[in-house]
Image 1 (cartoon, rainbow, N blue to C red):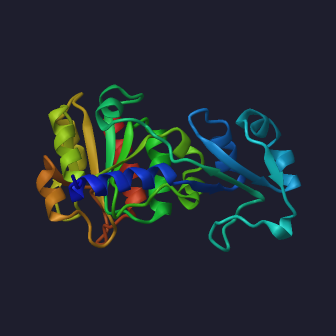
Image 2: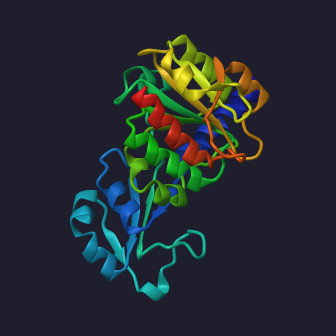
Image 3: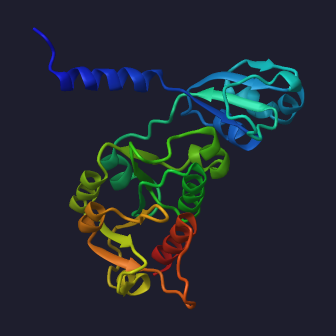
Length: 258
């Protein structure tokens, strides 16, 4: 009996995910990954200088380094990447289910949801802020979002190893799941009438989800409709637009101090 197309597609997706690997680069990102016991490490390529600087991390990482000439640093990362003589091939991290991380995870009952934020530098910066302010997770759709990459890891400056980054099949469905868990979802929209601080003041200790869209298009209509409220960050000048990672930092600070 022939398998249904959806079963075949699901099996293909599982095989692709199992085969997926990521090349991390840069001394900081590689060091943090080597020291992370949850990371599956596959191949470590270092120059002699980088190996000396990463000595203790290399010993703890459990993977034998390949020492190469700096002029022959041949690993599959984007040309021009500042690798500092260190690159590590790894499996993507598995943080577990949305329910487990957001209900029982470490940190405050606070999450960040990103709608179509595809720039790895923006996502990396959001992960850093989420770690600083103790959020439980950063959540993004599997498609049309920045995947786990070396560029993202480098911008995250180690936060990728410690801050759950959950990529979900359907963002609106994940939002409904969070609402069912008691989270109040606040969508940041520059044209909203309500201000972020006032909205937060009325929530007390309820779990909060901050929903941010990509610069330019902002939140999709479906995402807006799924939020409990749309709010804006107040601004003093006529031009009130923040980079998404800066907006996330401001919103996270407000949510943890309200």
